[in-house]
Amino acid sequence: MLLSNSRLLMGVSVAAFAVLAARIPARGQARTPDGQPDIQGMYSRNGVVGLEANPPENPIDPSERNPLSVSARADGLGPYPKIFQQGGSLIRDKGGRAQRRTGIVDPADRNLPWRPEEDVKRRDFLLHMNPPVDLQHVELNARCALPGLFQGEDGNNPYQFLQRSGEVVILYDYNHTSRVIHLDRRPHLGKNIRLFMGDSIGHWEGNTLVVDTANFNGRTAYSREIPYLSDALHTVEHFTIADPNTIDYEVTIDDPTLFTRPWKAAGYFARSPANTESIEFACAEGSQTLVNIFGRPPEH
Amino acid sequence: MGRKDWMVIAAFALLAAAAPVEAHHAFAAEFDVNQPVKVRGIVTRFELTNPHAWLYVDVKDAEGKVINWRFELGAPNALIRLGWKKDAIPAGLEVEITGFRAKNGEAVGNGRSIILPDGRELFSGGSAPGSQGASKAQ
Image (cartoon, each protein chain N blue to C red):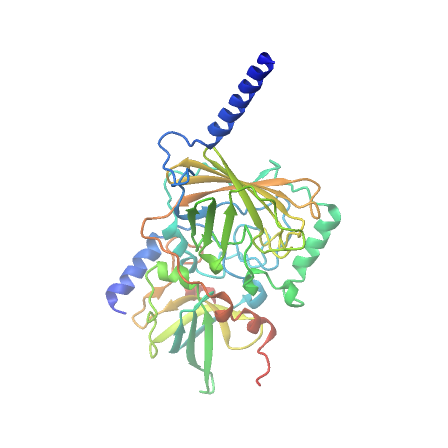
């Protein structure tokens, strides 16, 4: 009995040590009053949205990223002078981060594990986005929908990390979105509750914040080439403190409706200059996109 | 907005890195990259509204009829971070705008370059493809 008690005690001690070790941040890491590694501040996010191998011809994308973009011009002229989009470069910290992992990282060849029939549907959907055959085929961001995890307009709009007791809050500059990541390991919301930003449950493993998110509503996108994800989407994100100014990011995207197995994307958050502030972003009231596409509604 | 402010903006334009980022919306669903357009006219209004700023310009057509064009510009949050202010482009200023026309056939465009009366060109990022001169868009 004594022996078994000792073994039990040893087992409990080892388990307790393991739990504590996982919770104790590395030496020198600033902590919040409730003991979390302190990651608060403004950051730009970089590289999370990447281009898959064999991307679809994209009829809407003005980006240089996709060589099959309809807006690519042989003379190099493209829509939007760079200057329009370079406000973001002021919130970026350009120092020494070129070697970080970005874009689609698993599978390594970037051939995403599409269910063949869903890949066909996705490519067909894209073709109906220009011109948009109906409202559903207008890009989600252009409809001012909340951006989900991936469409936060990384170039122009920073992210602010706030930490309260038992919570990590991520404020998006883009479209005034927020994510509240609960650290109390509560179960996810009931399956009947569906959200643009999902329901996020997190915990710290040393200097890594692990976030499990479910309850998505099927109305968010990964990229212009992947214009929607399903409501079966389930993500696991790892935010790892690399240094005081950098958080490495990796996300596992598990969407069994669209893909045969999970895949991963990576990127990083770079701390913005100290004077960076979040600015109001009132999307719907200022957007003229729908008027330009469908015309003005009748006057009453 | 004084000359110094313009110089600040121009300096930012030259310094800003050419990091590829996303525009807010699907450009090609609204605008036709194969329809470059260049107009000269008088600024009537500048709206620094999200998700895109808009510039309104009175333009005389071949018969002398005045048409109010509107051009979509960049995202205000980006422009503000570059030092723009609400009065960045005052009404009454004569400008030349180069861009791409909307597919709806109206007097609407996506502006990529604005040339001021003294010949200075706004929005021309130093390392941007096509930044050598908006007039080459035609």
